[in-house]
Length: 298
Image (cartoon, rainbow, N blue to C red; front, side):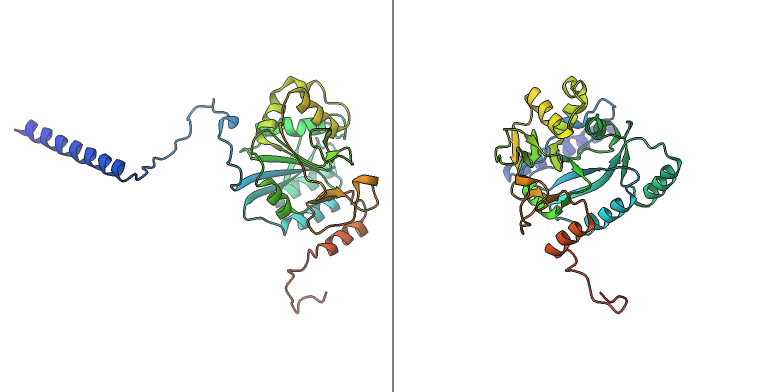
């Protein structure tokens, strides 16, 4: 008798479940199940699906600089800390090679404790002897997460984050190479390479740089030209986009790569002096949202 009762309960439960499934199938109601992450360590970041073009995305901006550039670093924290965009998660990091100076080690440790925005690579400080390669090739192993895009930027460039994000939003999330195409007179992003002032790679290209022998065996020379050469040799970056004339060098600093400041600017490069920075910040009215207060008289 007890077994018959158990059988009856099981049968009724099964019947209710079948009716439930049929009901949702008839009315096309989606049934969502939790997504479980793999429990083993074989899961690869590059196996994650790419974000759909036009949707919110993530961007890592690595500013390649030197450990002793404390003033520039603090200034850039202010410049980028007051910018944001509702359609992208943007992280800004300062990148340099191994630090050997005892004073710099202490100062940098304090910066890391306070801001947590520094990446120190396993290399000797340099410009054209592998720093950019070390930057890109290290990211898949040292970052706690992947980004849709990774940018390499100089510390003498002013990037307007909302404008950069807006120009990236419609771009493909894979096989993308974005920046200021060289030579200066060219509007063809497939003709040369992207200027080192600031260029963007989609995550799959960053992952390829980390794994491929092509960049690993070709790391000496002008870093921006090398990246273009790697991608060409590997038949990569079929999606290329130049942000000209919204990216350019500061007026009068670099011939045909320079032009006057324009309202739709994405990035201005070659800001070597404070008066140039002042001109740029005033042109774009960067402090327009400053609230009036009796605490200061500006």
